[in-house]
Image (tube, rainbow, N blue to C red; front, side, top):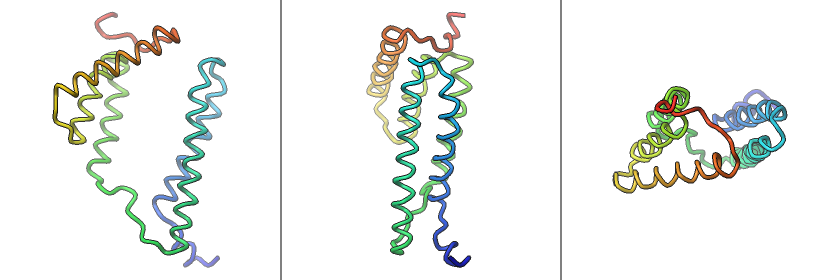
Amino acid sequence: MSINNFRNYLSAELVAMVLIFFAGAILLLDAKDLPKESALLPIAMLVFMMLLALVLFFTTLRKLHKKEEQKPLIAKPARFLGVIVTTIFYAIAVDNLGFYTSTAIMVPLTSWAFGYRRWAHLLISAVVFVGILFLIFHVAMNRQFPTEFFLR
């Protein structure tokens, strides 16, 4: 394959899928050190993520080979940057405010940022979502998350 042909096949989407696949593989190596019961969900999610990355990689490769029109990987860079910044703030908030408090704040704010404007629905969905998370992880699985700031 000549260097010109290689450039024709190089796209941001292909690079992203390779990075996602290898990030999943690296995290999969770390997940094997988790306790057996705790490792099941992360390992399943990582394997599924890697499989989806492979499917998207080969689908994109096929489209490039057929010279089908490619959509940009990031259609709205400002919105993408907002998601990245929000995720970073959420990770910091989980450590400082606690998991459930941060999630209760983050769910409606993220939905609002993506255009949903009915605050009553946003608040109800946040309470239901956090309640379900609490029931699954704290009650059913007996897993602890970072303690809430008001309980420290």
